Structures are given as C-alpha cells and as structure tokens.
Length: 368
Image (cartoon, rainbow, N blue to C red; front, side, top):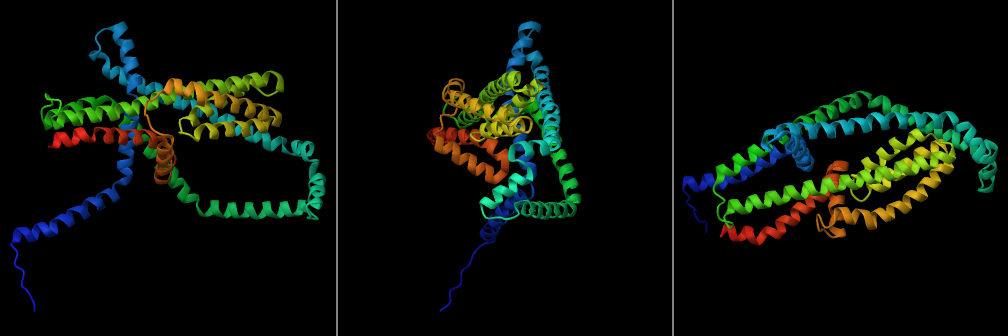
C-alpha cells in the first residue's frame, strides 16, 4: 500500500538548499585551503609581534610624546626588526653551513685515512664481519645511489624550480599580510565589535566574545614572546660553548655566532627543536674537528637539562598551563597536518582551545 506525501515549495527548497550550501562551503574550503593557511599564518605572526610592538611603542611614547601617535611607527619598527633578524640569520648561517660542508668534503680523504686507516682498514673490518671486499661493496652502493639521485633530480628539475617560485610567492604574501594586519588589525577588530552590538554588560554575548578573543590573542603573543626569549638564551649559550671550545681545539672562533643562531632558530620548534639544533651544530663541528663536536655535544646536553628544568620554567611559567600529553598530541597532529609550520603553531592553538573550554560556561550563559 503506497502513501502520498505532500509538501509545500518552501519545505522542498529548505530540504535541498541546506545540503547544497554545506557542499558549497566544503568545496570553497577545499579550494581556498592554501590561501586560508597563508592568512592564518599572517594573523598568527601579527599576534606574535604584539609584545614587541608594545615595547617599541612604549619607548617612543617615553621619549617622543603621546602613545597613540606612534602606534603605526611602532608596528613598522617591530616588523622591520624581526625581518632584519631573520635576514641576518639566513645571511650568516647559510654561508657557514656551505663552507663547513665544502671543507669536510675537501679534507675527507685525510680524515678518512686518519680515522679508519683508509680503504685497507675498511677491508680489514669487512673481513672481520664476513665481507671479502667491503671497499667494492661500498663503491657499488654509492654508484647506484648517485645514479638514482641524478635520475630523480633530472626528472623533477622543472617542478623543483616551479616549487621554489611558489614558496617565494607564499613567503612574500605572508610578509605583506603580516604587516597589514599589524597596521590595520586593531582598527578592523574595533569596527567589527562595534558593528555587532554593545558589550556594556559583562554577560552579554559581545562581551564574552571579546574576552575570549582577547585571551586567545594573549595566549599566542605570550607563548611566542617567552619562547623567543628562551631561544635567544639557548643561542647565546651554544655560541659561548663553541667559542670556548675554539680557544683550545683549533676550530675557528667565527663559528660561534652562526652556530648560536642555528640553535636559537630551531629552539622555536616546540619540544624537538632543541635536539635538532644541537644535533645540526654537532654535525657541522664534526666536519671541522670530531673531538670538538663530541665536547660540544656533552656540554650542550648538560646545559639543555639545566635550561629545560630551571631556566625555561622560570621564564615561561604557566603561560599556557597545558599538560605535557596535550602539548605532544598537539605537536604530532599539527606536524602531520601542516609539517614544520604545524608543529610551531600547534602549541598556542592548543592553548586557545583550552581558553574555549574554560569559557564554555560563560558562552552557554550568554546564549541563554
């Protein structure tokens, strides 16, 4: 027995319109995901620069007049300081890494002879483990590896050039948008809050929303600023260690600054960055002097324990108040979703989620 269901046009349109709108939104997000990531990173960087902008603004206000007058100049100065620091790190560290690698390749035959006894020593070791001609085996392996690498590089040369150009374009967009958000972001936010209603009463939705946004912005800026302070201390410590080693190990003292910059830069990556930076410096020092690399690794590991258990907790305090398992979970998810960038921004995003969880009762009360 069949039944006839009657419906009006309005219900029919709603029934089909809702899934179509949802599908349209999902399609838009899929197509615009790269642009949304660029905008999100720019907003994140603008929030991270807020403490520095306040410091610069305070300096100008103290010496040159009213605070409001110098807000734009302060934002421009803070932005230029960060860009110049990043440029200096790249300009100093890049040539040092290239030079140390070239020096290692140039001195490899002598180092190989002194360390392993040349190919004769390698063959003697091969006979001990049951390989008659270990030298020939290694040469065959290296030849096959080089041929495969040349083939891969040849096939992907055009796409690599295109990829580099794409990365440069994204970096430029991020730099420009970050500057614009620093200059125009506060005014845009004020206009937005004024357009959606009054916040005179503490329990009103607008007041709750403003407080949540302010807390989340504070989480990002506080975390990044304190992480940057500890990163600078880490870089100074590693640079000092390298300089002291250079006094009695025969390596160049000019390595101290770039090595310190390497550890400072990698420390900004949560949890794993300190290990990566220390390991990279150890490898580069090994290229110059293996014993100096060993000494650096031992001293840096000792300093890292002091830094992680004494210095960093004192400076960072309870800025985010997140348990270790939540931090590690956020880093893993962020890393697998967006790579290195995701690992860097994962922890403050987790802090923002914690703010939403704490403010949920107020959100519920405001809705009622």
